[in-house]
Image (cartoon, rainbow over all chains, first blue to last red; front, side, top):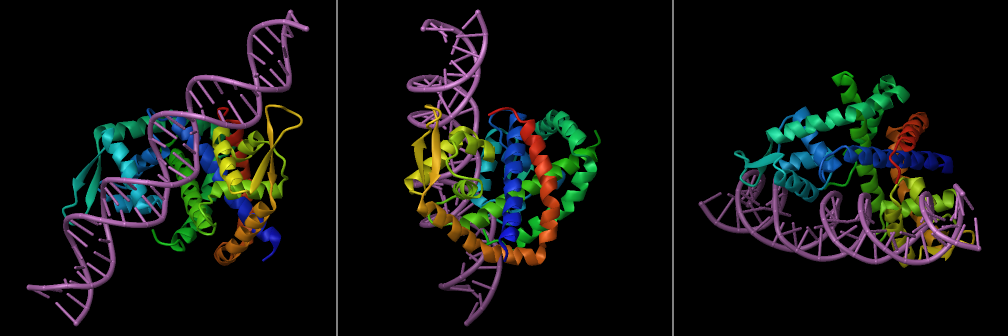
Amino acid sequence: MHNETLAAYFGFFNEIGIIEQLSRTLLEARLPDGLTAAHFGVLNHLIRVKDGQTPLALAHAFQVPKTTMTHTLGGLERRKLVTLSPNPEDGRSKCVWLTEDGRQLRDAAILALAPDIAKLQQQIPLESIIDLLPKLAEIRSYLDANRDNR
Amino acid sequence: MHNETLAAYFGFFNEIGIIEQLSRTLLEARLPDGLTAAHFGVLNHLIRVKDGQTPLALAHAFQVPKTTMTHTLGGLERRKLVTLSPNPEDGRSKCVWLTEDGRQLRDAAILALAPDIAKLQQQIPLESIIDLLPKLAEIRSYLDANRDNR
DNA sequence: ACTAAATAGTGCGACATCGTACTAAATGCA
DNA sequence: TGCATTTAGTACGATGTCGCACTATTTAGT
């Protein structure tokens, strides 16, 4: 294992970290209240995939510990952006449903971000993103498959 | 601005977020104590670039608020992994120096991670990483240049 | 030189993240 | 069926993140 090889992989994850940092900060600047990227992510996921999912399924989707998801859902519920109902198929479990407010807030956030994305697109064209996406997905998939369980 | 375009960019940042999450968790599992990725990142940076930098320079390097860097450096100093000295060129400022313990801890962490990287390399070859790096750097650079100041 | 503005760092408070330990429900197996 | 094990979710505590406000120092404009 050469030092330069190690350095390349470290450099890669370093770039990932900084991009995550910068994009999260930008997103949160466009969200109302004390809404965080985590809150937005859940709302967005419930719309893109489907709502009615369990908290644990959401924790897996975002690769966060379930205790973190409990906390995030608590914030969404307090703000009446989602509601939790008992899971009819499992008495230990729950289902997460979007409210009308939740859908509207997500749509508004996307609208608020559109100008930023449009500006970004002038510098980083869609094709570059399309090109990167499957490669990142592959890395994500590998890390996901090899993670210590949570 | 088409919906699919928006979705591609959102998907990109989503993958970034999950990779960041997974890689950070893996890194922290290889670190002793309550050392975090932030701590390791600073140690690594001080070695790769040079030590004696100011806290603000470090905050810029990692794109975190300076108040966050103060906190991270506090943890490193408590553990005697860095020392802070007054900046001879600016009475408001300080210089961050690695200790011998700090260097050793960083080297040990990299050693502990090498097997993980080697395994990753079997699935994601070095060439893929080399290919991705400049593209990510470009996106990072754009976001950096267009961020609201901190 | 003098004063206003900018800058480096920190204290503090609000909130997020996440590991541990717990409860209740479901599952498996003898 | 009965009991041990596994699983979904939560309470709690330790620590991390970060915005705001503050102090000390430097820089800039006159």
